[in-house]
Length: 243
Length: 199
Ligand SMILES: [Fe+3]
Image (tube, rainbow over all chains, first blue to last red; front, side):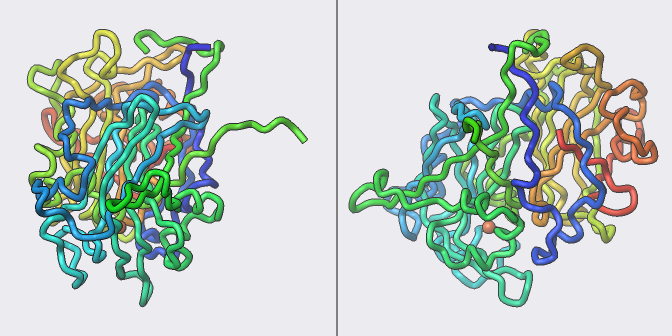
């Protein structure tokens, strides 16, 4: 049972619809024609690997990684975001790169195109990255991002959210998603969240408050587990040279 | 009733949004000093074997407008058809590149070596190709496609062979515009729509 086979096909019905008129930008950026479906090949089953040597000690600490000065932490509600990266078969995905980005506590991104009048925090950049450990675990120390308005329908607001990018070990596992926060009333009004039509699937993007990982007098914690496509494991796969 | 399957379901995707560059290529986005440099600046290092190629193009929406906010990633084999990490792979090919559409022109550029043919699991070869993944605002789940090359033999490639409408084949084949230079436009929707992959 050691040969790794093809990637488990994506369940597209468990993902957002590509075309959704309530999310206006998707209307002109979604393919009209069906995707070409095919069993994965080595091109999708391999993928880039990143090593610890690439990471700096503050890479997963968004409270300090911009100012680099313990006297100048980012403003906001301090939180630990943590969880595991698993595959379809509940196997941990170790040593995989997780990247996050987010608005500051006022709901403003450090980006030339973000003109929202919530102020920039001089001590907050808004990006972080880490590698999962041998159990697939990851952690970020950050601040809770603010909700923000965006130009879509007349009065649309994004719920508080953190963007997440995960690599896995195969290019075909590549995933970008968003983490929402338990209890945020804006989730139910968000046309981007609503591109996911299966409510149970959307609920999987809502991180619960996790007091077991909160540190008294310091930070709260939210847990966010991520599941990537797995690779079939059977004795019936033809082993490919070098893989 | 049956036994439970106990398999998990993949976490649903969400759009990368307009600020995907902050997370993936922060220096490009103007956020300096958090990382020494952005990830995936080049898929090759000095001494990579094989012919150097430059692929330029745009990501074009259903109205004909080139996206200024697209983020692309590429993944490929080396000139011998081996992926990084495989035995005997070219140590100067990292295989992975991140690049963005230009904020003014929408044009992207990928400089790399041309990959060799890649073996299939059950035998047979795939024609030389580079895998692409596209993320942007309005794209709710990242789009996979491939770049093949006009001046290679693509006639027996198993993926291209599965495309029933042969008039769509050119959407996956980079056109040669000069020595080592290719053009590859990606049309998200409408006339000439690129073949995207569920793979
Ligand atoms: Fe956002």
